[in-house]
Length: 123
Image (cartoon, rainbow, N blue to C red; front, top):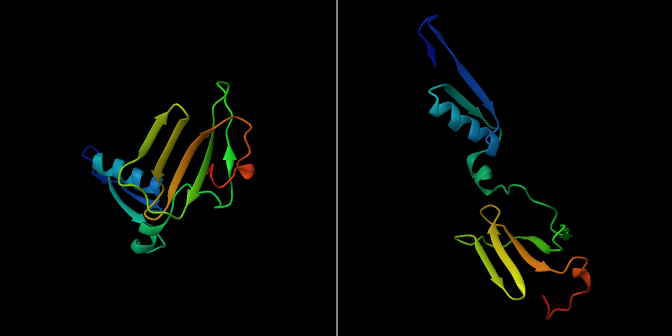
């Protein structure tokens, strides 16, 4: 960006090409501010990196005042082309991509239900 009254130029260094760094870079570009993004990893590694993941063996049931709970799994499974969400009389289920080679699955279950006790048929 050039300040015409002072004749100065501003350039910004963005450290990291993660979601936040690339968001800042896009905002700077839209504002006409010069920038450079520094990232220690190569492009191929960045494109394969998963974001916002949890350990694969962690299972969580969330509880809310409306007594709806869900079971979530982060899996090394190809993401869907589009997010999938289904609702039936049994509840809801969803499948969302979490990177180029991972998916997160959601399944509604009763609050307090323990997925560790589920039979193979139920899963």
